[in-house]
Length: 339
Image: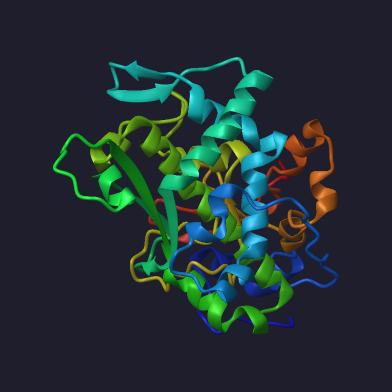
């Protein structure tokens, strides 16, 4: 074991055991590939979208933004965004929720979505040192009247100005602290896992931002009644994106225990968790994700697979090693068959 974090293990990591996590390749491993992504950074993640970052910190964020951009633009991921941008809103009157209609996606719709996402970039901003503890990120909305006179630098008494929605995405301050003080001394495996978690958090919150701006949502009540698919277990657009892309949810910790030493940084690994899992059920198993799988996402070769191959390759791997939460909220090690 070449590296042991200085913070206590999460509940899931403690249940499985540090030695078992190392054997499963979920922590630090040797011979990881170098970052070789060559795609462009999406306009949504350009320098101007991060107003409180220094140029040096933005450059350190580059691996995160390259991967996040793939989650937006690669054909294996992009159709989810087509539906978010273009599908109609339907109502389930019986359950009091809204959801998106199914659509037959065409190349013209994909091209239009590319334009829409570039357009909406004007109204979305990211802040990396703003959000308090115990949440990876949050999205906040506000609206203001855009004054043409103000933009032109002239006086005007006209109150009939257009109204615009803006989204402010705030990420946990632990991410910026890690970039500033730990990234250069962190082992390569931890870097990959943290870059991955940051990319997932950015895109998760971006899904909320695009959704909120499109439907002009401001209050938490409006968000709490809107889901992506009518079959989703929660009205949570960001989790819908994660589940659609990875087949389950990539989490650092799934515990709600307020006494746990919560961390946004995956010192003790990333875990795969079924979205529809319920405490005490057979499906409520958190599986450690191999660091080598996370590292592959940052290579050009991974994304050169065919779309059909990638639909399988991008699914979070599951092994027989896992940990399950019982009815009392305790995490116990478990050996399951490989799914």
